[in-house]
Image (cartoon, rainbow, N blue to C red; front, top):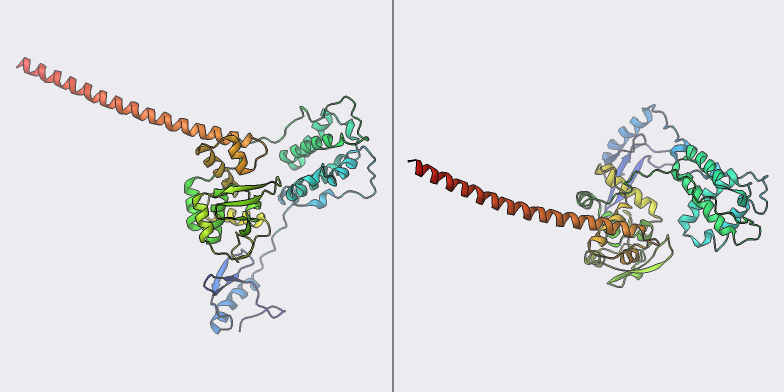
Length: 404
């Protein structure tokens, strides 16, 4: 019989429920996470014969445990313990730390932001509170901000430093509501302060047709539905996983955009509408479900699934889930939508990205018209050159006759 763990359960098994009701059983190797298909009947001798050698190979291997990732490898804000504040420190009224505490619990501060933004800002403000929390906010000047953000850039990167700079601006504006803030005639110290993050000019890329087609052809059905939904609606992953059947009326779908908190109606393009009308309803509430026919708890696992598909399976490392939002923006612009129309669909509060999409679409159109004009010119030039060659040939033939 197959060996079991101390609790009586077999180790390293992974079961995957199929649409036809059967369950595939795999052995997941803990060393490299590789899956090996096993017989479906776990009580059979055939299963034990396949399972036991795999388990023995794992037990006999003296492979060392993987080295834990360093703090620098854990991601942008994945280790909030670094920003724990010493309880003995007292933040007097008017200090940076005092205003941070007020900002976090104010309806005019962090509470008006989405849950995801609150989490991100909360950890970033804890960092600021630890680093410069005891300083008086109205005493900050541009030179101090440059020195502080430069130090953060050296330690944690330019993007983190620029976020600290931005949050100082938010605190300065928020502090004007309180009598403890006495800036006098001073301007916000972040005006003219240094930017540390150097953008590479590319950013998140839209998916080319070949990448999109390969993903649709390769992905499982639930991911095909999600990828199509992201492209046709232009919404963020966090908004897509929260879409409900009750919010779909057969033509439009009502979406609450998590980042802005706004509720908007999105008209469904015919391919997306056809997909919604024909796709199975695995969940009575939520439209999009995972491979186990259950709703997503958050967009993080969805982003990981799409990243594994595109970057690992299709070997296209430059594309991610958010790139489909750019596909939607570009297609809206190419369809002739105005800046306000693009902003209405994508939920942008600033016209910056919508203007970018329109400019890119204009470049595409200008390129098409320029190419069409070039082709017309070349065709005309070709006809002219043929006619010229024929005339010269006639002249040569006439010259030969006169010589005879």
